[in-house]
Length: 271
Ligand SMILES: C[S@@+](CC[C@H](N)C(=O)[O-])C[C@H]1O[C@@H](n2cnc3c(N)ncnc32)[C@H](O)[C@@H]1O
Image (tube, rainbow, N blue to C red; front, side):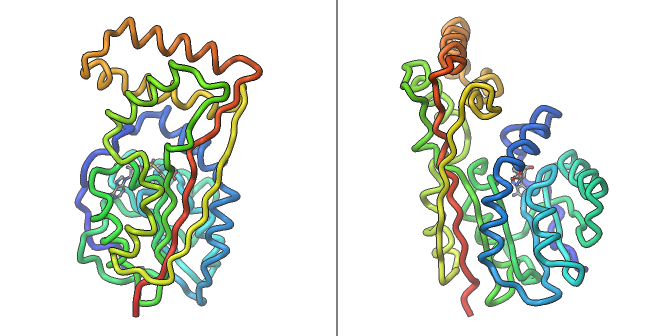
């Protein structure tokens, strides 16, 4: 199986590659597994198909792609972070995904068109250059092949009942996050501008309650980005006060978190 051409590491992943982030990504993958499978079910592939998961992290959708292409097909897990690739290899071995290999790096803008399906999930939202990544994904896809992306749009991310600490922390986080937190809404345009046709889209909204892992995701991000938030001139005591207040609100049995909208978009490389 030929490999994607670039081994250039590219910019560092904004959320880091700590053991905690690995666990978070694996847990998130479990939460999003069913809707990822539904996306892949919409994309017909011929026998011996080649698929790639760009920015696969510690697993991404490699297990689902492995199943999708079957024993005659092949899958590449690509990530530009060495630790993520090590963890992806561990997942592949643990799940015995014999048709999946990995590569360290990112796709170059002039990638060879090797793939029948090029997928990424939650890579663009963390990137300062999403257009270039989508363009490289299209370049890496064979004419008539599929490009599929899944990204969040923070617009709908809210707690009920609302709380001022939520609004303040969400606003602060969006300003230091580094990527476009509303990129989900832009996916069809990004695909179109990169040369895809027959573009379709689907969106999913989840909601959480106290005890659910993602009930407190905003607090996890607030901790992860605390230094950047403080660098914006926010007093550390103000930040601690906001997170404590919000922690109490989110722990209340009546508080529900409406998750960011998960937007999926897919299209074909124009003939
Ligand atoms: C939020 S994680 C998502 C991981 C996985 N796609 C999933 O859904 O669980 C983003 C991953 O993309 C990788 N990444 C970011 N930009 C990349 C790029 N240009 N090329 C390859 N990997 C990239 C990061 O190292 C990180 O592992």
